[in-house]
Length: 204
Image 1 (cartoon, rainbow, N blue to C red):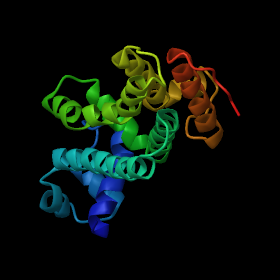
Image 2: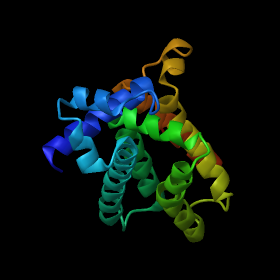
Image 3: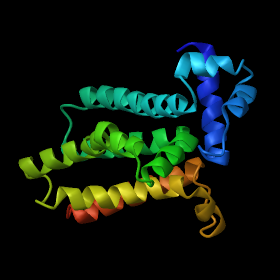
Image 4: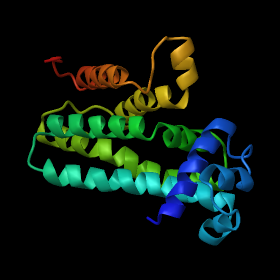
C-alpha cells in the first residue's frame, strides 16, 4: 500500500480509538498523519471512506493469514487446526488492538455499515472457527454439540477484552495488550472448547 495512504489509515485508527469516529475530524486525521487534508478526500472520499478502508484492510489481512494457515494445516487433526485458528485470531487482535476495538464498537450500533461488516466479514470470521469444529464432529473427534453455541461462547471470550480494555485493566487488573494475557486467554479459550467438546484438557 502507498505509504501516504498507510499513514492516513494508521492516524485514523489512533484517533478513532481515542475520540470515536464522530469525535474525529478529517483535519485531525490529516494533522496526525502529517499530510494535506485534501489527500483524504482524494484517496478515501472522506472520513467514512477511511473507516471503511480500515475495516476492509483489517479483515482482508486476517483472512489472507487464515487461508495460508488452513492450507498449511489441511492434513492435521481438527483439534490442532482449531487451536491454530484460535491462536491466529488472538494474536491478530493483539497486534491490531485499536482497530479490533473500533470494529466491535461499530458493530454495537445499528447501521448500514454494521450490517455490511457482519454480512461480508463476521460471517467469514465465524466460519474460520466453525470449519474445524464441524469437520471434527463429522469425523467423530468432537461430540455433536451446537456449533453456533460454541462459536458464540468463543467469540465472547476472544472479543470482550479488546472491546473493553479499560474495564479489564481497572476492574480485573489485567493488561489485555500483554503477551502474558494473550497466553492466559488462549489457554482459557481452549479449556472452554475442550470442555464443551467433551475432550480432556491438557495444559502441556
